[in-house]
Image (cartoon, rainbow, N blue to C red; front, side):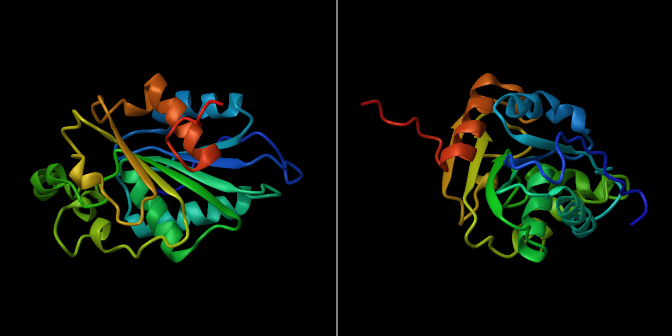
Length: 216
């Protein structure tokens, strides 16, 4: 698994009892793309690991195993371990949940996830598959990794899709076992930087719902 050293940042120690959130970026991005969201979660009292991986260099399974190793290393005394992914990062999370689930699992928020594959991956995998190794696994073909991962039973999953996403359509973000989903007026690349999305992520991690609590 050369080429897979993870870059991660976290505050806390084995005695840290805050809930832990892993954030995962998408294909051909870095953890800097999730930094704003990670900082907002830290300000709300979570311990955050903004996990970086060389997203073009390996397969989903290899990334999933590396993530599972990092979760085990960082878990400490965290009472719950949550995940917030963008694009490919969500497929990596799904692989881990299916094959190496974390201790004390919490909730998952998926931003623009290609859960049913992506027609954009269909178009570009033939030409860029050797440079972006996970790209063929994100195709809409019935046997692609994205479409054949086992269900994540017992995990509360919330999906946020972008209405103007030209890479992952709303329909392609669908996951049968998701407990909540919604669509925001966003494109793919910077959906995680929207103020409303940051608020929705926080709400789902806290309550398991995107709905605002009833007043009175």
